[in-house]
Length: 187
Image (cartoon, rainbow, N blue to C red; front, side, top):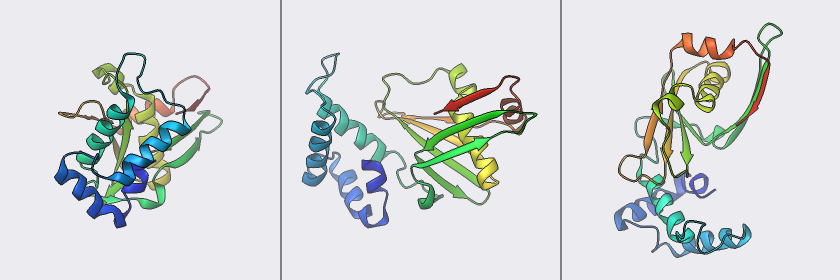
């Protein structure tokens, strides 16, 4: 929710100030929003591993804002921020996909989909290669936008190198779509 709010053009100066200060802690309104959201979702002060939830959230938000937040060189697709999508196959290739895309952007006929992850571990190479989530997003871009695409997973707990990129060939995408079983997936 915070990324969706701050990506709006009117908040660029605010995001720049956060970058310059190296933390979100001096943005009182943002800190208040985080605290109110923690209350709303009944988040404890510490997680089950003894980590301070507030501090962890603040650090993860900073990582997300600090990592190519405005998709340099790409045009953010504001109409499809946090968009829900639905794809349905044919009788010959039956499938249904439902999902939510965090942050799409484009440059020419190339679509970039950023997906924020708060998980404590990055994906292994084999998980990336066969990521149903990434393949679903890329298939959606091909079908709905008529564009080739790639996905950048941004792991918010890894400030030094948060991104993991997934790009596949059309052949892989066709294989994913023709997977020989009926399947229904919500991501």
